Image (cartoon, rainbow, N blue to C red):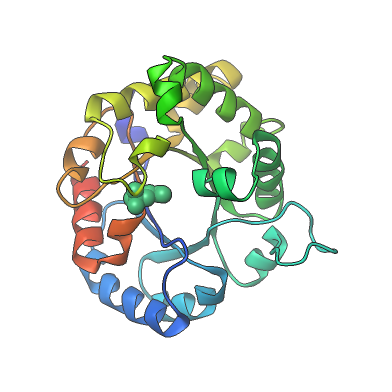
Length: 256
Ligand code: PGA
């Protein structure tokens, strides 16, 4: 697989952190540290921070994303935000299928597929998260599970649309735990996902698709992870809230 054919993407996932004023501060602190990045830099922020983050990111190379979206354009869905609304706010990226959404808010492979579909239709680039629980890894079904999650999420996605899809492999046991997958484990599953893309589409599509690793990626372990042949960057939780750490990960991905 030719890594040179794809651009690494480092995306922060701020989760439920930062007020608008704090978001402005954080983007302003990160911007000068990542200005020479050789990878795509994204900050996925809480809905209420989008305007402030965007204002602070103006004229920088930081792209703003959201953390979820609903599949309908509008309607009686109290508390939800549509992909169309995000697009209208100038958002470029959105995460779907994060394990916290799946675990705490009832997202399923089918709703992840619907959210992904809606995000593509709205013109967004989608970071689709897949990953196994520890029990599933111990059962030896990681590959099968992640392959199935990927296949369902991509149901109805055309090869052309795949240029706006990023897959993030995030083992649930590694998220926010400080327990990172080894570089070999991360690469193995990212390679399985790439194989699924080859099977669903073709070899060219598989070679072009960006596949991130996520789960306790930090300034210390990023270089080894992103140097793996099938790992094209990362989805970063905790470390994305610390400007120097996030910048160090961006630098590691730039060196790739
Ligand atoms: P973490 O989160 O880096 O804090 O483990 C990653 C994620 O949930 O995307």
